[in-house]
Length: 377
Image (cartoon, rainbow, N blue to C red; front, side, top):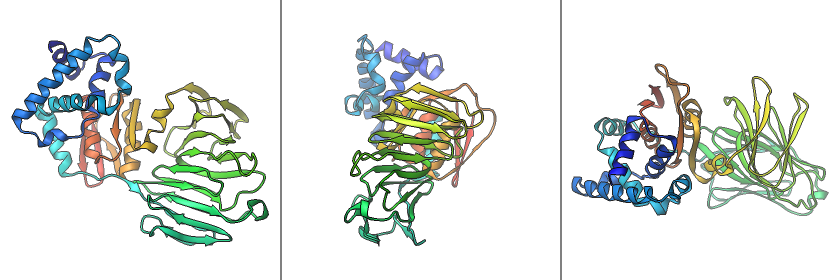
């Protein structure tokens, strides 16, 4: 148990190695605040149980490699114990109380559909069922909030129509099934423009913001599916990929999970082909393009309901928080530029939970005033 205590002391003193930080944070970032309902005696019991379990796992040489991906169920009671440990620290406890008093709630399924004739439908308020019909196309809102397009008859015999647009606000997300069967998950503050009937020659959509695509392979024959952003075009047949093209991000990123994609950059006449687990970066200032190998699951964690930070700077993290919680972020004082953060947080927690966890590093602190979050050293 002494080893576990020493590890926690090193973490809170800021001298733990990256591997040691990963062990502690992997437990704590899965903590669901259950400790708040426990009595002081029970808190102490859970804390001691957690230390004992931590000691046993530290004695297993192979356990260190497993922590970053360990299933939540396998570490739940240890996560609780580590979380309890941190609640004993008065400064952090006071901050947590302050956050919850001024808390900001989560985002959800919110979007507006703009039809070809200019009509706007709030998908947030629309009842489930058929919400629109256009030239043989039925637009249906499913019970789970998903938007589904259903084509009647042979698409080859129909003319391509004007486009529809689905737009998510800050604090919104939405899932849509396009007329060809392609599934799209749209992240917060994003928009997708698409025809209600795809042509026989190509399937093309226009994206602003971020979306995850699972492209239908047959339509009814092999027809390229193209995602156009302000800086790049992604061309595929049948595949799973994510495109991040927010205006306020320094890079446009395309991440491939399955299949193959061709990413072209018209401004530089460059094109690259990605294989699974690869990501193409396009620096908006320099036009530099590079390909790196990534863990694709971390790039699409948002689509599964998680924030997953992988050695990210606070500015990048706060941009994600601003979009999902619909808040303004300001900085006060000088934040250490080299400081990076790692961990996994449920997107369906109030913002206080995310901020509390980031504060555990002692590298940043936060203040909430209305819908403004101030980041401080």
